[in-house]
Length: 155
Image 1 (spheres, rainbow, N blue to C red):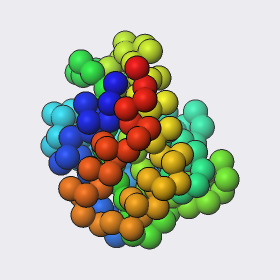
Image 2 (tube, rainbow, N blue to C red):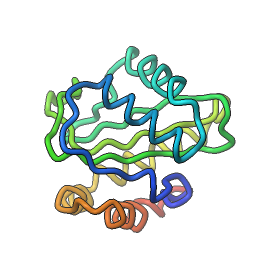
Image 3 (cartoon, rainbow, N blue to C red):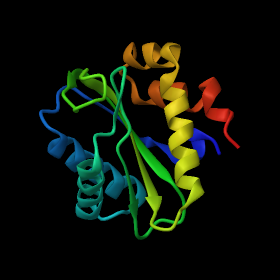
């Protein structure tokens, strides 16, 4: 599995400021609808339901919201870089500015976990994160994510 098979270039966005998780999930719903044909309201509901189980802010300014949805045949994703970090109830209590959302089929099983591990490994790389934070061009951000060394290590 590679990030290039999960993340479409048009699913990479840069936002100035988001004021709440609710607004973030709405924006992710709109991206999922336009890029992957998913119902935006279903995406928002699924993300909020997952987040109610525990925050998906993993630390170091990174959040990995994820949800399982009907209507998918493989794992897909969306990436947002925020100019102004937002509070996300992260494990380290730091605001987040790098958000990689994953959407998996309801019955995806191990593929969902492999994708989550792949994204997590990629965004644990401080060099990759520094490059992502230093760029505001979605095309460049997509290239940085899909060409990152960690993105090709998962089987």
